[in-house]
Length: 403
Image (cartoon, rainbow, N blue to C red):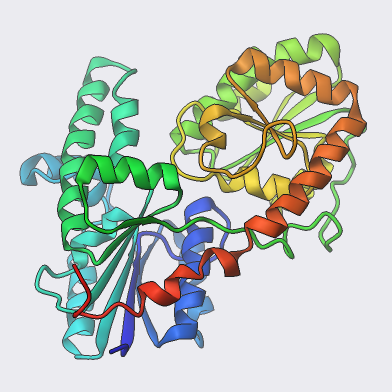
């Protein structure tokens, strides 16, 4: 019987300004339509802490902590306890105490856990319905990281992939259902864990917000020359590697044909390696921006040249919703139900990406046509309401349902 829901998320679902927070934000809002929800979550910084009050009036109660544990401490804790470092990064006694007290109230019938790091807070003896949204197969991501870098970091990432994979398997065995962001991720997770109930719950897009005809600030002064845009959190390793590869290897080819072309790297928290790319001809690093739509609207082409990617890339869907031609890598396009050459372009390597961008800049009408088809496709297939429809059935699972 549905009573109240405990929602755990590794990052506060406000503001919905990055991929994981966009997903958790919309899931939380939908759950609040089903039953009273109690939220336990972390803030990355003081800015995020300032959004805690945004949940008041929507949720039944909230516990938001500022996460300040340094990575070296999480690493030591992981080695001592045998746990994944990424899990220890989010370990907190005060969070556990709040979760335990909330469950002890006797009102919680369902727990929805967003991201594997938060599964450590779900008691092993919880007898209600436990839905685990892994989003991506994080252990596979760390295994990919272990293929490069210095010997120490290869060892660290190889260990993290192995230990985290064991953790994912143990949590999936306890959960009533394990959710992944795409069918490809769900199939991979099923193979790795042999969990009994694994399903895809896809990401959606707010097509009213990401609308080329919407109301938002226009870029001023406007770029008079070809503008290529990448959007993303710029302290995230796959994004760093993607823009570095594109800036260093694609842009020289593009500027040979379009000398005034600019590549704008748009996103908050750029690392020094990203900031240094601005010294390259035709590369601009913006840092945080007030509204990413301003840059998407100004773009002639949007690129997503990720070499490592898990799940569905919101950045691709957002650009498509803004009616922009998107040039994506194979990794960035995985899990997106769209057709190459009809809704977006999917290229095998940086050379092919550069060639495709050059072709689009040389023939703007082709980009306009693809962008128009892209937006129509996103509206028809990726609205949040339709994507989250399975939540109604999932949250109706009771303790008598098959485990």
